[in-house]
Length: 164
Image (tube, rainbow, N blue to C red; front, side, top):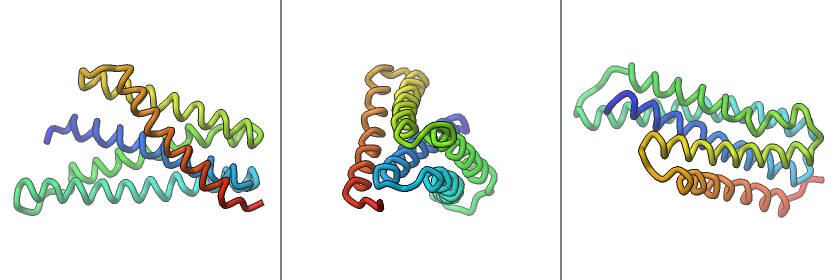
């Protein structure tokens, strides 16, 4: 496997998963009626715990794939690097939907969080398509639509299970 493909896959996966899951989680908890401070704390804890979980999963899956290809034990170098890239990508991307909760009131933060997350997903789709020489707008729209579905799931669950 080429290192550049490993980076692209890991970065796109980390950013996309982080945006989708973080904004979905925050939207669901917000709609359920959680206090503003709880939303911010939940987002921060989630960003780091899930980033570590994704990094470990990425490390183990890349190591397993390399071992499968070589039919032998491999160096931890590339898989460990992939895990580190996943951690950083996930944490940084998690602060995109989380940032509005530090500066805005709850409902405004929710709207801005969703808007910037969907826009970022759209841009990630375009960037990914550009790297692969695929149709830009269609790939951007696809990523935004799929990610937006997770937001809708979070809002639906939050509305069905209110805490306030």
